[in-house]
Amino acid sequence: MLQEALKKARVLTEALPYIRDFKNRFIVVKLGGSAQDDPATLKGIFVDCQILLAVGMRPVVVYGGGKRISAAMRRTGRSARFIHGQRVTDADTMAIAARVLADEVGGDLLALLREAGGDGFLLNGRDHAFLRAVKKTLPDRPGDDLGFVGEPVAIDSTPVHRAFEGSLWPDGKERLPLIAPVACGCGRESRLLYNVNGDAAAALVARDLHAEKLVFISDIPGIHRDPGVSGDIFSHLDPGEIGSLREKGIIAGGMIPKTEACLFALEGGVKKVHIVAGTLPHALLLEIFTRSGVGTEIVPEKRKADF
Image 1 (cartoon, rainbow, N blue to C red):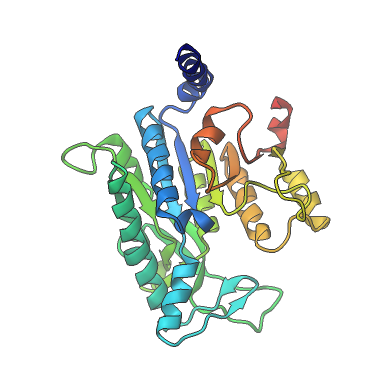
Image 2 (spheres, helix red, strand yellow):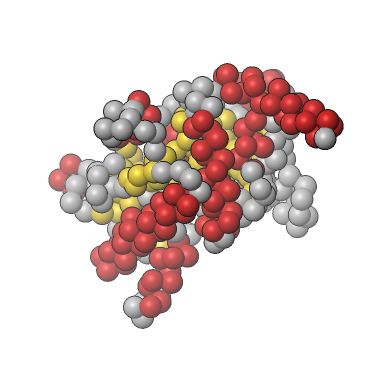
């Protein structure tokens, strides 16, 4: 019993400097991959977020839902088509995507969060003009039209700040923001809706909030040293090393847009970006509150000397 108590005390002692340093700082969490396939995993992540709230941090969740969109399309007899990993989105597909992301997935996540003892609120570009985007083009393939696929360019962070300042609801209670990657257009196109890559949306949100950390909760535990060997990952990387790994083909496929989102966040002033496995219990807490972490941490090159 004493040894177990001492172990808990050491954990708290190791976490204390991080609790002090990150108080009132934003931690943006991107929920993706297997994390959304298992309700128990999601509840665990939401418990971690509540712990962050309890110690004075400001967690914000951005989520995707590509699998759910594809399933909804199949139910209506439509098939998904992708170009360079981007879903070609006509008007009907956009209506499906907006409904699935903003209503179905958002509603399910909010219900799970409440089952886990917390509370939250939904934000998106359809209902709140929270996220804005411009039409995404492919310069290297000018003949291809992605339709209503957007490049996120701006957010209205007012409701997020008000939520953590206790002025968004009469009871003054803090609630976890849950953000869907559905964006409205800009200027004269403000009535249009765009389907936005969730990783890109999370990076923009992190930049705008001047987040301390952006954590991608993914199918994988981090960036592998050898894509063919599981378990061996880089603990720390900087932008230069990311570029080198892409040239060598170690970072390829779906990891390319994810690492692009990581670099975009760092360029905008986000202190650190992390990629961790959603299936690891309390991965979010372990990555934030321990020295070694459990995934891959990506930092600006000028700060690499810290390690």
